[in-house]
Image 1 (spheres, rainbow, N blue to C red):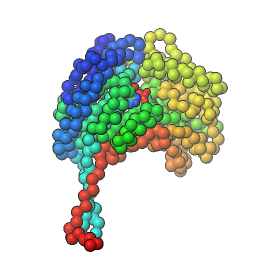
Image 2 (image 1 turned 30 degrees about the vertical axis):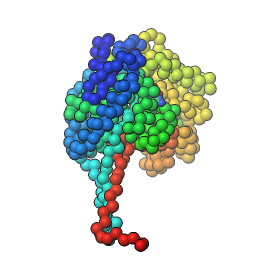
Image 3 (image 1 turned 90 degrees about the vertical axis):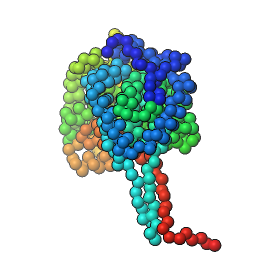
Image 4 (image 1 turned 135 degrees about the vertical axis):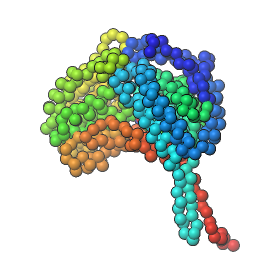
Length: 486
Ligand code: NDP
C-alpha cells in the first residue's frame, strides 16, 4: 500500500461510491507512524437521506427473494473476501495499526466466516405449524425487520461490519453501516464486495461520520433496528434513542472480564490465555480477561512464567510478519491507558512488566502487567481498553466466583482447572454471556457472542442472531365455525 491512499469515495450508497465534500473532513491516521494516509468526509444530511431512502427501496426487493437466493449472494461475497484477504488485511492494518500477524487471520477472514455461515442459514429460515385443538392451527412466518443500522467500534472494523451485515441480510433486511471515524475504510470494501457478489444497489450502505451521524440514523423513523458495538455510555444513549420508537436493538458493549486460574491448571495454557486475553490487538478487545485471578499455590509460578514469556513479545512495524504487538489506535487512547497505568502505580499495584509509552513515531506502548492488584483499585474496576493486565490472588473457589462476578459488566469469563466438575460448576455461576473453560477469547461464528449486565443486550453470531434480525408473525387458522356469545 502506498503511503497515501484514497478510497473511491467517502461513502457507499445506492450501490456506488459517493462524495459530498461539504461534510467535515476526517483524517485517517496510520497508528504506526502517526501520519495521515487517507481522508474521508463525514456524511451530510443529504447523504444520510440518500442512504435511508435507498435502503428502504432495496429492502423490499431483497425480501422478495427466496432465502436460498439471498444466501447465494452472501456465500459469493465470502469467497470474494477470502480471495482478497491480503489486500483487505493490509488496509485493516493501516486503518487500525494491528499487525499483519493478526489481520491476515482474524479480520476479513472472520467476516467471511460470518457471510458464509449466514449465507448457508438463509434458506433454512422458516416458521412453524402449531396445532391448537379442534383442527385449528397457527402457523408462524419469520419476517425481516426492515432497515437496520449498524454502528461500529474501531478495533475490528471489517469484522464488526460483517458480523452485523451477514445475519441482517440473510433475514431479508437492508443495512446502513456507520464505521468508527477512526477506522472508516474497510467497511467500504465490504459494500463493494457485496455488490460484486450480486446484492442489489442500496442493500448495504456505508456512511461516514462521528457520533452525531450515528445518532441521526438511529432516530430516523424509517429505521427498524440498531446494532451497536461500542462503549457502555454510547450504548446507553443509542439504546434510549431506539427505545423511544420501540426499535429492536442489539448492544455489544464493554467489559472487565475475569479469568480464574486454579492451582491445578496447566500453567503454560493459563499463561497463553492471559497473554491472548490481554495483549492481542494491543489489548483493544471488549471481551479481554483483564482481571486474572490466580490461586495462591500457583501464583509465583504463574508470574514467573508470564514474565519470561512477556520478553518474547515483538513490538514494532505492523507490516512485518514477525510483529506481535502493534501500536494503539490513537494517541488519545494511548494517553487514556497511560493514565490508568499511573493510577495503578499510585494505588499500590506492583508493576511486573511494561508500564511505559515507547518513544518515537506511532502510538506504541509496552504491554503491561500489574500484580498484587486489589478489587477496589480503579485498574480492576474500569475498562481500560489497552494492554494492561491486572493479576489478583485468591484462596478458594467460592471467593473467586464472588469476586469475579463483583462488577457491573458481564461480557466474558474464563476458568482454568483440570478438575472437570469444578470447571462446569464455575462456568455455571459466572455472570457473563460468553464463558471459556481452559481457553480464552475464541469467537467462532457458530457460537453466540454477547454480554449480560451492563455489557449489552442481544447476541451476535450463531442461530441466536437470527432472533435479533427477524420477527415472527402468528397466523391463527380456524377450520370450524366462529362462535360468539350473542
Ligand atoms: P464508542 O462507544 O466511543 O463508539 C462506538 C461507535 O458509536 C462509533 O462509531 C461512534 O462514532 C458511535 N457513536 C458515538 N456516539 C453516538 C451516538 N450518540 N449515537 C450513535 N452513534 C454514536 O466506542 P469506541 O469506538 O471507542 O470502541 C471502544 C468500545 O467498544 C469499548 O468500550 C469496547 O469494549 C467496545 N467494544 C465492544 C465489543 C463487543 O462486541 N461487545 C467489541 C469491540 C468493542 P465515533 O467513533 O465517530 O464517535
